[in-house]
Image (cartoon, rainbow, N blue to C red):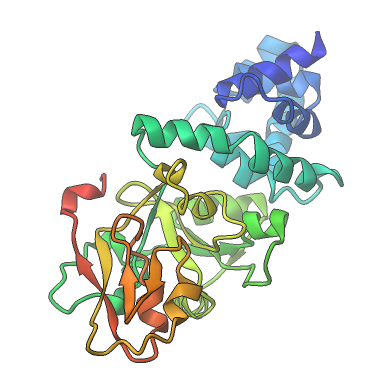
Length: 327
């Protein structure tokens, strides 16, 4: 049956019982294209032989799937090799930047992320599976004596980047729950090369990237990257749309995001109890009594409360070892 291949592709992304993901796959690929995705990894010659088509037709099909975000390619001596999405987040982010997506495509993704995606995050949290993404603290909010690793300093990552691009935030693009900056998802090196080849982003220089970081901080967005030493992107996330951050404030699903190595603390002698920190905290870790109080268990160490504090009463202190961040 035609629907079986879409269920199979959904199963490979850990959503065997999804009723929505097969519909998304149907928009991305016809039945033959879906069979090709299921056969990957392969190059055009291998696809041509397997599916009884010319190499030219196989190449066009693979390239179209690449443009749609349903296949990813890597240069090899014998020709480009294409592979399927590794996980649901990669599939989500790539396909939502597909320029010719059907009219109902975003709606299906929103429906999926709001209903069928959260149970996976509960499993991740309960089982202690490594988080998908991690927080990058705002550097200027750290104590002077803090030791900051190269890959937990967004500005240093930009400084060391060989190629940079920017794309729209796919979460705000699809959910549209706020009016915070949209064109702020920074792609680094391999990530930049990928999005430029697909035509889904634009090349920027380091000065533009730094400006995006600064504007994101001012807008109350959290810097995040893949949960390993050197990621391919710096996302600037809000707590109302983000596929990760909006679940980080819930104890049942917060395992999806790894905290930074830092935790916010309040200097009670300086705190004016203005409450601004409450409004900017993305995980509701702040309350006000006589002064602001930080729930260290909930705090993700992003530094937004510190950067927005009008009396500089909040700073980040190093509370976790270097090994907290996988390399």
